[in-house]
Image (cartoon, rainbow, N blue to C red; front, side, top):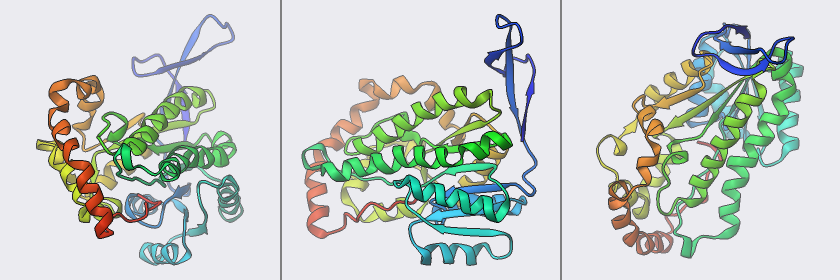
Length: 315
């Protein structure tokens, strides 16, 4: 990993030369992953594990953190040969993140990539939302990312490494019943935009990932929810389509290795990013307004049928 100074139009102005009035443009360059070390939270399943496998194939050593030992053991078995370290930990506890990074440094000598992947989501209309559960989403998706990145940051600065974080399309458009998740992802995107500028002069790159629907365990678990199904019915055309995990993971892995500022999954989501203000206009909200009228009854039916599972902590 490294940085180069150039004056091309795609550079980012972040500092000055010896003469503080003369600005420099610093652009992150892609890097050879061979022998590098990736620290990945929520690494035992879903996108965390799928991206980890692709990075491993490119020659990276892996330090995976997740909530349970059995899940991590299963992930390590799936990854097979290669250097893999597993650490049980919870991203809401900063000491767990620090312990995982310390273990990676002891085992591999450092950390080059911090993939803050662990996250949870819940669906609950405001009238029935449980405040502690709402706050737990923020604890995992916002403070969990903070703890993860802060734990790895000394290594990343020393090795001119990379941070990769997931903002989701929920940071762009905010669906009814998903206020906790949308708030956490919008907050996360703001953090990551700030960090990208703040860390550039240290040679640390920040990649923000915006997936739409990806076929992951978290999405699969939502299929039994009638409220979740109604919410998705309010989406039309490409907005309602899922991207298979085997398609999404390579897009994310290659974007990380290329040190791109943003990765969109699928690629057309870049237009949602560019035109995000339109998502909050009346024409775009019409179908969601209709769905919102049904959500409370469907949510209560889900609760009655006990198909609203505890929020998982890994995407």
